[in-house]
Length: 412
Image (cartoon, rainbow, N blue to C red; front, side):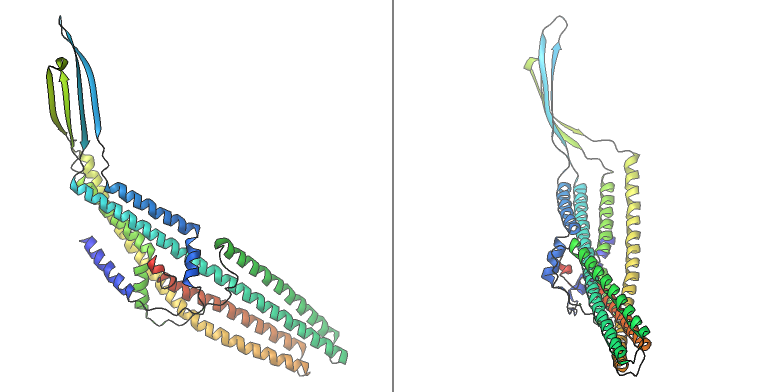
């Protein structure tokens, strides 16, 4: 009953997957490029090789594990006070796998393949998340480098304005010293940003050597249009972690079926022929043997039934973990998008304020401390918006990857 219900539920999930709408993915890496990078990843290649191993294993299980055994013996018969005769005996025999066991072995092989397919899909899934994360980290580092460069140029402009006012007698040497210190600090920040960008690129290129440096455009996050029920059903249907647990359950069920069938031992059937008394007697016969089943076979069957229950509970546990992760991902994605709008609006306002303060200082309407404070506030707001944008993009596209809505992950 359980396998039938499981198949019905999987069919329903598959139908909902087919009806999934195409998401908005502005700026995301094209599928052709992403798939080429993913397929070359060592973890994905290892999982793909593991799938081929599973197929070979299923082929082995589909064939009978038994082989023909040939027997040949020779003897010499000596009669008391009589002649001696040369005799021999030859035969072949083979155990026969009962039909119920063959069916169970095929089910075990199919579950093995499905588990390997799920592990291959999970390797693709994890590599996709790594690709997205490393790419976004590099873009964020590059944007941080550009921001640090702009801030260093602003600090250079502040110093020029102070020096101009100093020559005109409208500024003190203390102001010049403060502006010089600000420039030196921004030069340090720019150098740190260059280092971080180089490190981020090194990590990305080491993991995905074929990645090109021209892909520096942000993938833009967009608000979610579908409700929580859609994302829950979609991600559960596409989750390779859950598919792996379900394949383990199916394999345990098939092994329990095999253990129940194995309570009846396989018979061994053979034919033989013999020559006795120097060929005067010819013997031909058929032999059938079967082990007498003991208590251990019953114990193995009972053990395998308990393992089925263990696997069933693990599937339910994994499903609940995924549901919690999905709820967390949805809340994070929606909250990150709102935070992005607020952060970018705040950064724009702070940047306008810094420009106005720069102009006011040049006209002698503001002091240097106010100008430097405005610049620091604008820099902090820009950095916060940068980090928020990276987080929002990562959470949105991670959600699409989990749902297998990008990069053809649903056709793995």
